[in-house]
Image 1 (cartoon, one colour):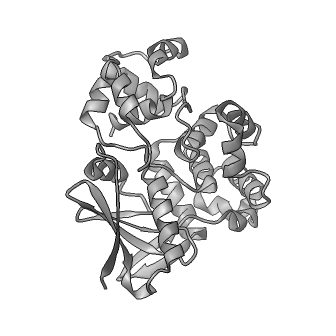
Image 2: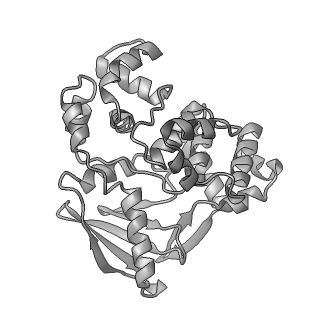
Length: 299
């Protein structure tokens, strides 16, 4: 069954869909979107759960089509889908200041040049971002994707379309209603089970929200997140970077960042915190994008 083209999204002049597809294709275990023949498919976590096909018009504008058997989306539904996609794919950030500083930075110049057009692809849903941060604590990326797939397939939403299954991340109210014993069969540690349920309870109860964190600003938002059980500085900054889109968020203790710095400098030694602070002095206000581009060197 076909997807029906319904709209075209404008993109920044330096945007490259192919660069972003390359990032989104980094794991074959990804369960929340799929890439096929140069197009991106996803069930959006919105009312009605529209399934969309996103493609490129000569690698500039983006075309968005909706699964045809789910009815014609209303104007409100189309606007909600556009808003989600623009936030998810980071289509509204002016990266020219970042490219200017990166061009003169010995660590960033190569990454910015090789991957120009890459955006900080985000995680718009706060619970998904926090849960992904928790799942990824102290394990390698491949196993984190395995755990995410187990969680999604056990408690997320599923929609079948044209022979494919499209999944959405579990809602916080669903996870909040579980006990640790319910999550243990997924091979999560007891602590991670406890952390996921606790975070889900807070979000479901409205005690933590994306809007609240945005109003706080970077420093206070980081402190608010770290006060939550199971959320340390790394997870807090990851959430602020990927979900809240705070440009100055900086997961300085990230192992992947350390590997990328070693790769960029040709060093065999793990960089010290003091060394990272020195190397990143010129990134001020763009730490999250600098980190994202350096991560890209590893894929």
